[in-house]
Length: 184
Image (cartoon, rainbow, N blue to C red; front, top):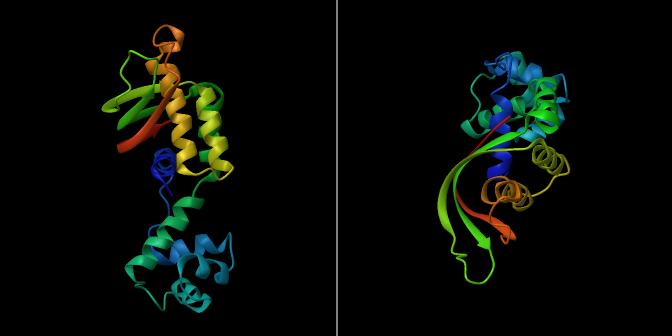
């Protein structure tokens, strides 16, 4: 996962209406609703027998890396309807807010600066860019492609101000992301 995918996942989690299961047994029982013990074991890096021991409570303390994989698997599957509803709202009417500190590079006309520099931006992108971002994520796009979608949105919304300035600016790139948060 890349910076953009991580930010989308964090934004999804902010809208949970209930807390995910906290205990190991509850987490394993939740995962078993969606997959077999063998499939869960392959995903988290243990055997199906270990998954069943976690479910029964005979094994209570998995290694830290396995516990992290279990938590990630639960959070990835938690409240899918809430996630879809929020994403649909962002992609149709709400849009998405990007807060970042990153180095932006430019392709601009001769006589203007194209030196990249760090900027801290908080910009609300229209719903069309949210839709493109969610579609790309759903299609399995890599982080580079999702960065470009956000860069296109920032170019159009922030740098060109909807066509009122910097009309010669043809391309914006996000190079070094210090941090990036999304909200929708």
